[in-house]
Image 1 (cartoon, rainbow, N blue to C red):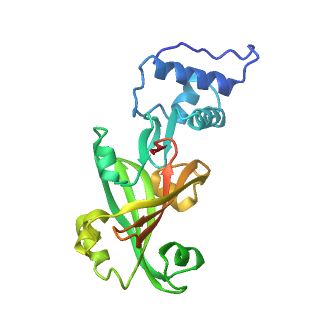
Image 2: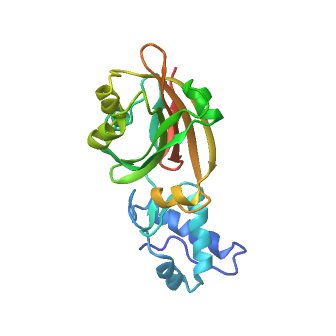
Length: 244
């Protein structure tokens, strides 16, 4: 560890802020590279003879700035540069990530059926109460979870979709098995919210961190609604790019 920043209790600068600046200096000096784990709260507290609450505040400040990333159960890491995630007429996760020389992966983390509520009824153009298939997914880039998504489909229209997705891990391939060879993005709505406890656990976020929420509708070549998705993206790992 370098010593660019020393704790000076008479400097008029809060101790937690001095620790935060020291960590930033360590990162700038290359002591901790992108994706590297930084020392634990206990290690830093011992180094500067402060309590862990003071260190925790410094780490929280750098996390809010997007410099650090806290993964529950794993530790605190130097945040990677946010990955561009273009929203276009043909938005395909694997193509987007592979095109940036990164490795995409993902898996299904849940599924079920439920009746269409007012929002889903309107989005998918089906009567209220129509049985829908719900598929929940986790998407990963270079081993780091970046987004979770919940997608809904009309169950009667796609009876084999769940099995096809479980086998292929791809909505594009699964829909092809069900007779939909292509689809396009008709609409995307981007908002933000604080991550809930369940998504925080899956994404390795600290409760209260922001996530980008993208609600999207895909349609088949005839313009018929096929898939409505609500995606929650780790805001420090992905940045949405709107393409015309």
